[in-house]
Image 1 (cartoon, rainbow, N blue to C red):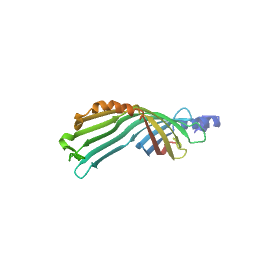
Image 2 (cartoon, rainbow, N blue to C red):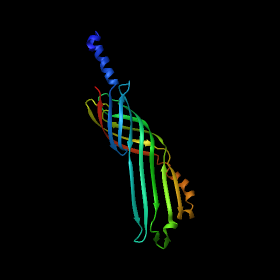
Image 3 (cartoon, rainbow, N blue to C red):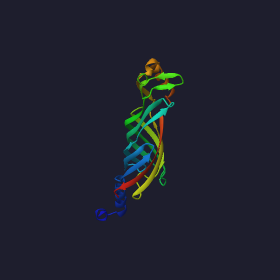
Image 4 (cartoon, rainbow, N blue to C red):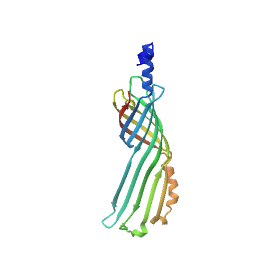
Length: 223
């Protein structure tokens, strides 16, 4: 049809291929340290730059017991959630190589690193005797920024030349300085725990970087 609408076949072929290129999109499924992910990628007006938007879901919950001896057990409930929505740009500096650079920003809509500690037995350990009621409960949560930038690099085509492509990427988030949020009653009421928290925050302020590695399968939609 393009032949009849345009007297110059080369011009029509170029315009048609450019139009197809601009409207190519792909969907991808990822698995890695970010958990399971789903994303949509699209070409930009610039041939070497592509846009991506997506989400990942990671959740880990574990309850385990620390046995101090046959009479004393401490219960620790840990919780990790890393759920995000992200917007990223991929740049391919070399025309015939699938190596690319990645930059973007994530919104961590459900990010939680926490632990809850109590005991059902009390503590009888090396001369220390504390019953369960006096021990009480301890809840500690480590929090970072909600909006976090990230950079990285990878290999693979964001828009497959064929229907499928396999990608890998390595990068790092900048999370900001961590903050500790604690709630407790019982044994810690008799300590200076509130005074120690700012000191601990200063000591861990450099723990602001979170590396990631992901593997992806992409499927091209359209021509």
